[in-house]
Amino acid sequence: MSTTSIWRRKASQTYFPTLQEEITTEVVVIGGGITGVTLALNLAEQGRSVVLLEARNIGSGSTGNSTGNLYETVSHGIHAIVDRWDSDVARTVTIGRRHALEQIESRAEKYEIDCGFRRCSLYRYATSDDAKEFLEREYPASLEAALPVRQEEKLPFPLLHLCGPVVVLENQAQFDPHAYVSGLARISAGKGCRIFENARVVELDTSKRIVYTEKGKVNAKEIVLATHSPIDFHLVQAEMIVNREYGIAARIERSSFPPGIFWEKGTEQLSIRNLEVDQQTFLISVGGAYKTGQEDATANLDRLEAATRTYFKRCEIAFRWSAQNYRAADDLPYIGRDASGCFVATGFQTDGLVYGTLAAAIIADEIGGSNNVFASLYKADRFSPIKGAKGMAEETKGVLTSLVKDYLLGQEIMPLSRLMPNTAAMVEFENETLAVYRDKNGRLYAVSPVCTHLKCKVHWNDVESSWDCPCHGSRFAPDGTIIEGPATEPLTQKFLHKR
Image (cartoon, rainbow, N blue to C red; front, top):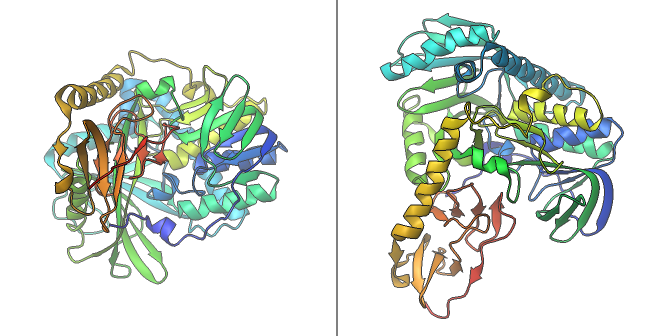
């Protein structure tokens, strides 16, 4: 099954070189998503020397697998921030996000980036009686957070099971995230930033400020981990819940669905929008969050497709993909210097396009010696045991459950002879348990099932053909190579001497 997003499928490649030398710079930025690339441009505009390292291709991670929606509120509900913090914090969050959204619009216009930026309304609505409470809390909280919301009785399209009023937030936006980030990368390179693709970081020496890739080395005054989750071991990983969300793009009749951001709260949680590209119209639908490595990926994708067909029964699904997100225990991202003196930007949940832009502004200001009014709210070395207790307990429970299940109870073992093509399983071979995948041609890939990050055991993701760690979200290809951190070492390859 192909799992390429609609943005990346139609995107032009950037073709930056890989790093094969030792270089010295003022700032090294690790990660080529919206956070890293925006930061690289911010720093280049300050006149600083910058090196950006991307493990794969620019925009190939969560940025290129997002919905392309831009908004001042937060997807999990601004009432969660009002309840956990207060209305002043919620207002600061929305004001900061508004500034970031305006920067995206300004840069798309200034640099003439063909990313389809458009302003539109955001609609939140309930499709079940149980979900009505969410909207009843969200509307007054949005007003407290100084969001220009109103209530309406109907959506701009017919919906059979609409429960209660619709909360409408005007003047939000949408764009093509991959096209935008690719455009920013080219502009950054033109301003002197050195960008390297296929330059995965394999080791950090934070005390000496040295970054090692597979074939090169960077010496820097400042290190920025714009990697969604900090690579290697980091204290904030214990405070974040790791989820994957699945997305699809289905062909529909032209102009059959109105422009806008539509967030359904009900049995399923959907984010829906339309996209017109190459004289075709698509309905983009992204489902709720599922814990990485702990749930059935195929079942989750099937539920998303079924929920999407309640809007268009005969739609043709053309693209399927997923993205990973990290939820901070206290609902606010971690942005700024950490205990090692490096910079991190993580915990964005599903709101990373705007938060990433804001994070880049905060970090650039701190490196440049300026005070950013939003920096204190998101500081990376904060610890909120009371406000974050529920989130920390949820993450701890998930990790412990996985450890108990896999180490004490054991994962299900399958005889190697029963492993069919295009399937994977834990296999007992010569008194050792291996994670084995058999491809469509019968070739076997065998690796250690122990994640190289913190030694949890990986689980097979049959949608994306990957081994996913249920503890902190590291993901590996069938041959053990790293797809996604925080792990910096691949799964150990094993060799089968017979089939």
